[in-house]
Length: 203
Image (cartoon, rainbow, N blue to C red; front, side):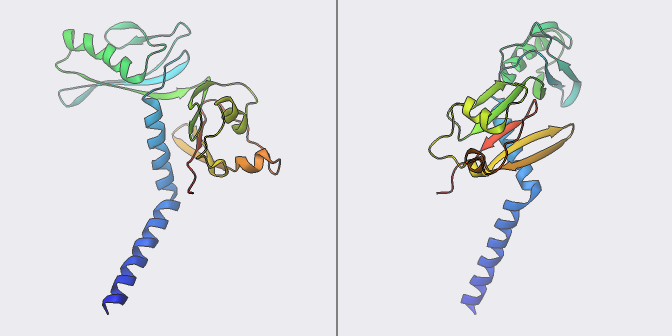
């Protein structure tokens, strides 16, 4: 009886694990985590759309989407023109929070998030030089990976994903870049803001 019970428990655990692994919700959650980590080192550029949310006293005091100008600046709430180009999101948070704390709010918290980068694509995962790259019309998933230095030794190009944001929805496109390299299937042309994620090999 004990052996049968243990076997039943193991079977349930395996089903749950594989169910989570293939769930679209789980995949989207994993890809969001990847995007969030990437944004910690992302450098803001002209034409990027960012969201600024200011908290104080446990409440939202201001929430606004801003587009970075061609000169690399934004009109930050309460404090006016701020140079954003070249900064990371966390650096911009600190620059905005400091004057807000001196003149407007008590211990304000500022959250800056990247909503859209119109002129960039992102290559991440098992890539030699993961980063944000300038978007070029006609660029494909494989070409983007080559631009980023190619795959690492531990890469699994056959399980590459393209994460594409359409307004409030996230579309995940799977592509086997091994077959693309061999000419067996066609490559996929990218759109501005696309993220190419190359996972680690299981072996």
